[in-house]
Length: 551
Image (tube, rainbow, N blue to C red; front, side, top):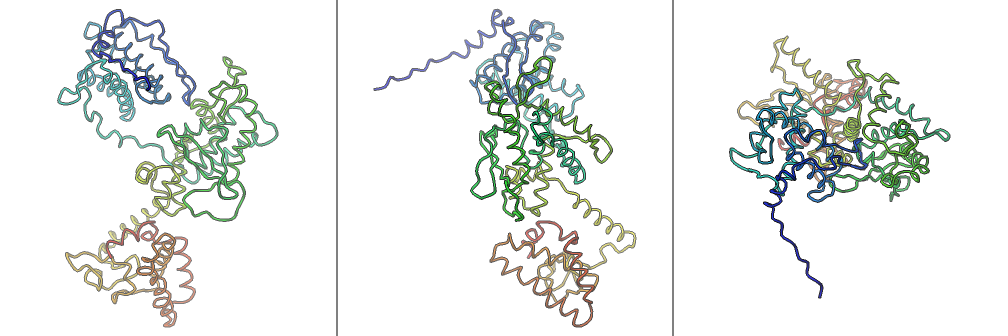
């Protein structure tokens, strides 16, 4: 029979008393916390400047909590997050506490972490002139540390009522104030792609030395064509390429810290003229070749690298004076420096003529937006390509594209023309053609003056009229229906949509040509125009599914 494990009970009140004793509150021998290697450029954080200024008990407790996070004793927090706790949170919190203690004229203890102290810290952040998003970050990371301390009984937390230690919503609407990164417009994307491709060519020619700048350029190309996040790309292992069941395709496998999972991107390893319509995207072969080339060039360096870096792809020999000759890996800082150099060397500009703002997050937004355009608005497939849920992709990644802006300009111009001519609401043109009665027609709702939107029934309606000027609208509807066939349920296609192209060809086009209402040239021109430049109403990817409840 196995020996039963005995758990020793810990008196949390006694632990709190030990921390608050004067001898336990003095400055410890070691004040520097080492983070080790991570995607962050910061390796240490020194708590020494915050001791002996009247907040020793709180600083000591926070230092102990950070050390517990690093030892994975309280929560599985990533090292990059812990560095943010220290640099963006505790550093500013200690500044506020020092000023607060000086105003009170006495040293602060853990018992002083109350609602009044938290409210004062929020006012300090507000008066600091930082953006709402920055205020929210610096408050939330401090709250994370203090909550972990309270769960251990280090100080008494009030979790409800008017005196709750942390207010329920201290910065309302902070998410709306942060715009996030915007995808690169087409011209800027093309200029960046050309610049980074030219800059990375030395890495592919001969036995070039893999410098930090060249490796950063290679990482940017992978980011542009895969849409992955910064940390998984920086920590990409040398065995990231795996065989794919489909011939000529390779999996790029990356590790995602949040969620502790891996995700895959399919890369085409051989050229093929076939167009891929599946949700798993296939990329240009140069991406796979580039990754293999980098793995080949950095193989000797991995033998000399520190143990924690021996599985990384992006390793190089440092040229810094304090680390000259040592093998290191790309991090956020070196990547940012390489981006600045690329923008300066190639004079990359934004629409306002300012230096182009670039980072991996913006390249990810660009990738997702581009995929959404290629897949003609298929949100589910776009979310799969981005590695997110559809509602996350729709809310945080997708932005109206250049085509949407042109469509809005067209609609605004139409509205202005009707306002100037005094015909606003007088026209009875529909997105399909003309209608003799859009309020009481055959398929109109006939209640409350509502306008008819039963466009799928226009070709069967006795009130429907088509002139030569309406052919563009009609063929835009025609092509929209045909594009729906691959992703429409076969039963619904046969029941509702299959008849529409047939009726247009037979009852409108053929009849109009027979009666000489239309000419062949007019029909061909309208058909081709609608294919390449559809009417704005039918340019949207989801219009038919939106109209379905109305039928």
